[in-house]
Image 1 (cartoon, helix red, strand yellow):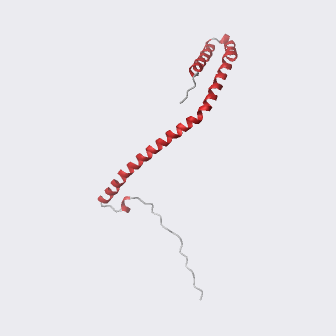
Image 2 (cartoon, rainbow, N blue to C red):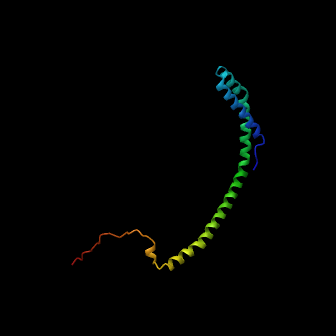
Image 3 (cartoon, one colour):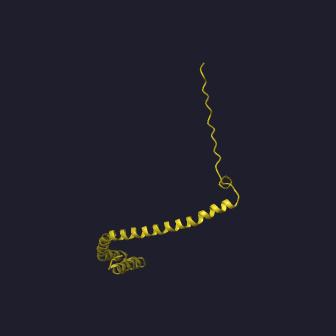
Length: 127
């Protein structure tokens, strides 16, 4: 996967800005000057660097999506096979265990007692 080559430089610049902000908290008298230097010198370069990184990222999105889809398909196929194998081994075992226990099907599986209480309709014969 391609990586933005100037990312370490961008991180160092951001760390420098964070350090200046930390200094401004301890030096309240010069706080406005520190923020003005960040705004004038550091901020425009950071914005330009970020935009360059974002443009590079957009070019790499198509390749990254294709890789991600291929990886997902591989994982999906693997887990489908695992579930299928487990089911092929476990289901016959469960069926055989049920047969050997002597219980009939209705006694082992709980059911909801639903009955029909529909009123009966009688049609009167006209004489």
